[in-house]
Image 1: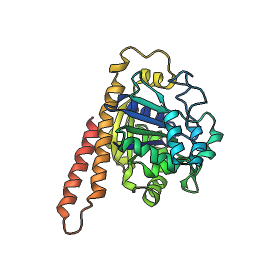
Image 2: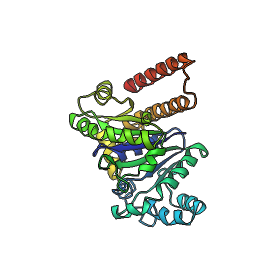
Image 3: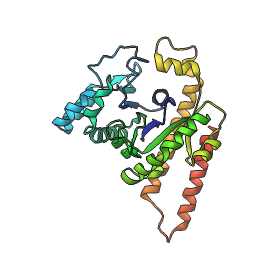
Length: 292
């Protein structure tokens, strides 16, 4: 199963999108709230039911002890997003000042998340928050860069507005370069479109020169509930957002699988027909995301 990191240029709904994908997944799923600016799910959707004794920050001291201690701490600090425990959450930081302590923890956490995906069969989503740049590069403390470098896909969450696209244009070159130089390749980068505004998926893809891997509708009531908790809106389980989130998770899985095939079976010069097949698969998947 894929490990997918979600990021934004600024306030585009990363946490809401990550929650919707996690809750709508057809398989067991895990959301790691790794925004260095601090987590919001604890005080939002969970309504304060999980205190600061549980969460991401406590993995830093465990990591210094060793991989086994980190694995035990990781399991101990997960909480459930559903009664059956199929949807799991690693709650985020309660204080942005804690982010510096995690710089050495991110690579080891990336290993654990991939174990959850590959061996435990979870769809893994990482809420990476807003990208922070320093001299044109990903900030080492204010962005969980190692998680992005190891992810199967990195989805930049954008809205279909001119403002959101303008902000995205500012960070895309640095993010693409970082994934090319230190990650699994610039082709790991895609877009997750929140359908608010005048621009449709094909227009967003053309404007930013990056494929729209998946799209989610702008569902004000359900988004508000995922942000703030309280009583679910009427029809929540059948809501447009959750139904489309399940479709989006399928598009994400297909894109990750296709990329894995491309990496494993990169066509040599003597087999140009394979490149044509992969190109057609890419076109088909992009069209599916636009009409999903």
